[in-house]
Length: 264
Image 1 (tube, rainbow, N blue to C red):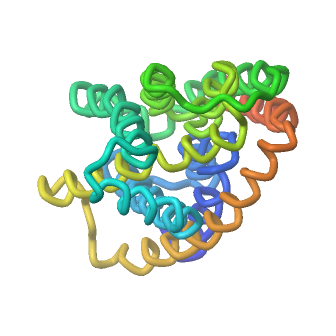
Image 2 (spheres, rainbow, N blue to C red; image 1 turned 180 degrees about the vertical axis):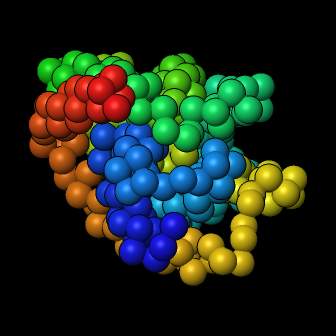
């Protein structure tokens, strides 16, 4: 992988991490188009680094909210900040269980499984269309809601299912306020990404080669900057109930991916 390819993949990751079109699915499609020949482990390493970049961009955009959460936690009171933190933790549990029990199986999905990506993009399209038709409310995320949203996040570990699309759509279908749904969706993934990075670093699973450091660094920067723009953009889009446009996009790309996989 050269620097230009890494930058292109970084921009794709930064935009699609927050836009409900599946960042992992688009990365797999882009790698296929660019002729990336990385083995699954190397491909996964680059994907994890790009997700780390977008996690940092999330912290920058929501820095005030994150600061308030930590402030509330250290007050040791049953306040809104503590409740929100507990809901985030609860939402992480399904993805943690799936990640630990089926890590190798998940890794096998990252490595040119274009047909799977296409089918899962169609699933994302249906979710977004249903959410776009739901009525907006002022409801907050409950503890039970966080469990259901967490299950959606676990399912979205498959390439092609948009994590933000699945979690936001699930939240909206549960009757949660759209702005709160987007905020919860973006914040709930941050601890998982940092946890994944920490686990892989300690276990030595990440395969960093000196020859790949420049492309990886370029991809990281591109993903971080694109993520800053996409995060703010997505919040505005969810408020205006424009998810149907992304539903159409996911459907079109999904059918193209399926056609490409069957004909190649």
